[in-house]
Length: 415
Image (tube, rainbow, N blue to C red; front, top):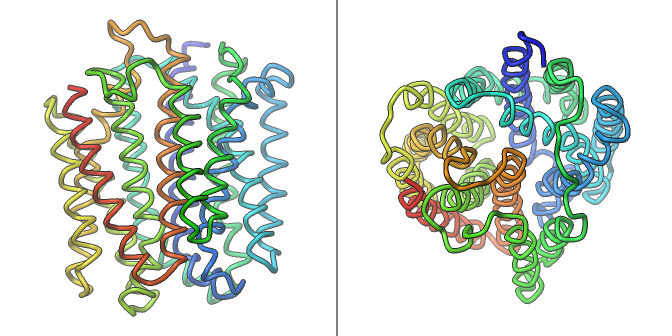
């Protein structure tokens, strides 16, 4: 890597996070509209899990594609698949076709997303890395302020199908910067194909369970088995240090991203609010996360991750029973503040070898797998519960709050 490489890589990683923020707000804001237009209100799990399922299919393929095609070739393959999947989702007439399109975009994004995060862990020192994490969180500020409103305005003007294309230029810029910074593939052994594919296979079982609990439980179990087989030894027992931090990342992903993916549905279907009010609440948590993380990155306290995740757990429980718009807005905003306190320190703990003996490649693999498995399980389980009934929607938030409380305990053990 050239002398300017680390800085260019850091900018690329931050740009990718901005693209992820735009993509996330577009998807969450449009979810109620898409579910109605595709007559898929009882198939929410299918609509929201496709992208993450695609990411996990990409995990074992990323190193293989990079070795075969190089960084530039992988960019071409990834962008072709991303644009093709986006076009498929935008023209979908059924929930299954929409989910297939999202699956393609998730697979494509995963090819370079895994490469970029692995490169950052290997090539950026701890001091620069914690600043990149804070700056990446700050990239959610502008999308949080204008994203939902802009998405709704564009949806009214051109419809949700064209609005899905909004993130394309941001995704392209971030990917180009990372590939330019790291011109050769990251030195990493290929992911074990069979064990890695247990994760999306199990999650697919949860998505397709449609409230049938034996299949949902079996699917979740297979996902967890696949994930733990890829984690460093001691993660399942929350062994102090890096393994406990990785366990906290998994539980955080289940609780926070599961709750975030359904917040607009909770407010519109559960509490009968308008989509405009739901969009405002949707912005509150990432805005609180982004602003607070800039401060938390400067504070060296081993207790911040546990305190922050405990605050988010309490806020998520309040959201499930808050009812009024002001209470929900404040609660979800404070939930984001808690994440902002917790995330920078927790992420660095999960990606720092220290005396653990883990290589950078192993840590890169582990942190991506832990957080994204959490996202997948949270969205799949939440979607399955909420598709069953309105009470299932509220029950899912109780599950999310419990997961976040467990994440706070794991974060305490990681200190």
